[in-house]
Image (cartoon, rainbow, N blue to C red; front, side, top):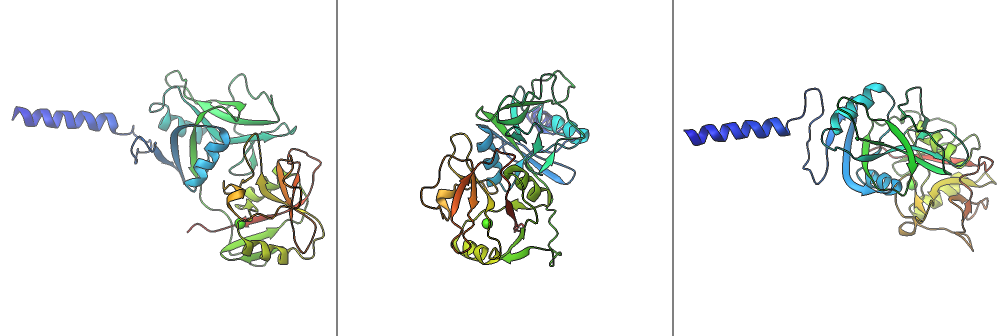
Length: 304
Ligand SMILES: [Ca+2]
């Protein structure tokens, strides 16, 4: 009898320690895979490893997710409640980023600029470098809110990933510039933009800037772009020491289809399809420059 009582008492204790606080998402995975929780229509996952910003982003992509974007005080509070107790004194990357000399931060996962809600700490933002990313940390006083700080991409932080509802409207079959390849929906931009604005424009439509992973996709794109004697941005890019990657998917370009023009890739961070309507070979271009304008293709594949 004593044994049984003791058993129930310890089972209750375990329940209390592991159980999530009321109103806060539940830990539904084991600790080595990190915490998972839900707020509204989004799912969140902490990947409890130390990543550079880009590695964190691609680790989220591998899960079919994105680095987190925080649009409201409610979301910031709910995230704080879910992670601050479990991951004390930790840093986390968000999808917040700025590129080049354009001194405004945006959520890469949604393509929207910060605001109206922001929650910077008292020392941020600093705009120190050409490429800055936004982190938050749980070095908190009890009851405090997670604040944001802009920092250098190479530092090691945990990844906080978010899966949002898909927003691309696949019922729109007659959109100007819309065409299909396989299960994908593609749109040719009516305007020219710098690289990261082009990427944001695609994200804000629930799409991604183009990635060319196969010869079949490349052939179909060459046909679709016949009338355009100009070059096009893709999501191909290279930052810091990382090799060229399809930013939209996180895949190393060297591991997919490649179509570099002779002498390429050079030193540039961006990848364009060139203006040759027969080959559309790839050339480097400056993705930092506000003056480097080009059309682009957005791409969307419904989740399976
Ligand atoms: Ca693609």
